[in-house]
Image 1 (tube, rainbow over the protein chains, first blue to last red):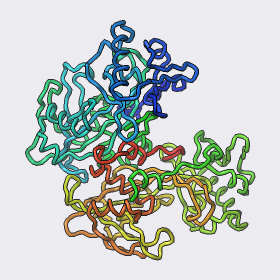
Image 2 (image 1 turned 90 degrees about the vertical axis):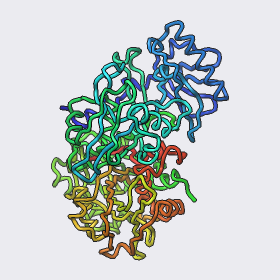
Image 3 (image 1 turned 45 degrees about the vertical axis):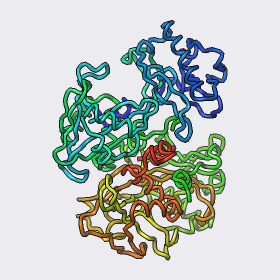
Image 4 (image 1 turned 60 degrees about the vertical axis):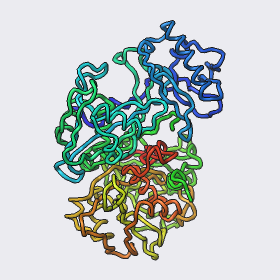
Length: 304
Length: 304
């Protein structure tokens, strides 16, 4: 049985050698947009549109428009993929991920599979649908069981609905899309009943399980939503990603969490729900203050 | 009209010279329990039970038990008070504040008025009572108006209930006491309806308005609670600290917040409520990601 702090630490990890990382910069901006390991910095086929400073440990993308920057990045990654420079790029998905600057300004779009090479913040949405109310003992949460055919964490437990934000989507639009795909929740239901409740923030570090390079920092911000279901409404899986939906009591969810039945990021989302709904408190959780703060930790990366 | 990020920045402030601060250490613990300015370190009448290292900028309290440490601190502060060494100590309140180590272990108790001299984390509770539900347009919040006779921020708006935790109280016990004193909420009501919802964390820096030394870091962690009031229950002031309670719509609270009608820490609590109840979202708040993370910022101090 794992403690809640152990569950948190499995998801939010310190980088083994933070001082070694190169800052990923973009012309016209002061703050870094990500971090690159020395190994990646050495092997990446940087071209004339990049300023690489191995002493200052910076890699700066030159390009003054969103389209320019996206094109420069794309061409370099296509070249790296053709040369098989990075194992990660074998997982190319043709899915553009957004890179945000100050004030939610979109500054770059990058192939999803390449995001860990640059330590770019990934954005996602997570929704927990529940019955009962947070002050009561009858609170139950709809938990998804991931399909046995999923590439990552097959058969494990999951939030009711979750997914990654693509370039051009707002969090709420992403939520509406994922709710339809994963739980057959209509757009009208989501607009009426889903309540934004903040974010969870963490940094994963890739290891051999990711099927690519190890030691890459993967910061992530997930927008979390709650949905108290109206009488008679239940989630119904609508694509092949979810095997079934089960309605679990808080005690059952706690127990599954402690036994490691949720993937790291999904356990994180459960902990956040427990904090916001009075299930974890200072009185019953030894590491309450640390857990509460860590769930929304500040990422040392430029974010929207 | 202030933006939400501006309201946040009024409460959570960077220290003007963080590198100058001495770490407040306690024998047997590695982590600092607070931070002391060079001026305070120079003038404090440290005795034989302290190890002061002006090069390493550390002040270490020697003492191996809670009682020992509390006694050593108390005697030094009484002496400083008698000599009028610090203006802040003129506000002596005979109220012991807790200093927590790892795993919620109480390691020291210190007079409330002296906490800023050591940059020790203050703990408090904050409750917002509301009617309606977070997904609906009819959500209304009970806002207190502070008495005109209050020493700090007289006549300004406030959470429904709030107060500081004394040594020996748990957050929930403190909440029960404050709910009775400030809103006439019975213990039974609080135990049934109040829902713990995390913390808000910030660091104030004292200025001339505090009536004592300026530039002292005052980190604070407030345990936040929501209470959806049952039909017919309303808060009624029960001591001289609250002038009246008013039931405001979300739009009215937003407007009062933007006009600076809440003291800094109370505005912070309102922002946290707005984040957790879907009132602030990525779509409608330019600085959403930063605000969400900052509200629960990690304090660079040892905490429970």
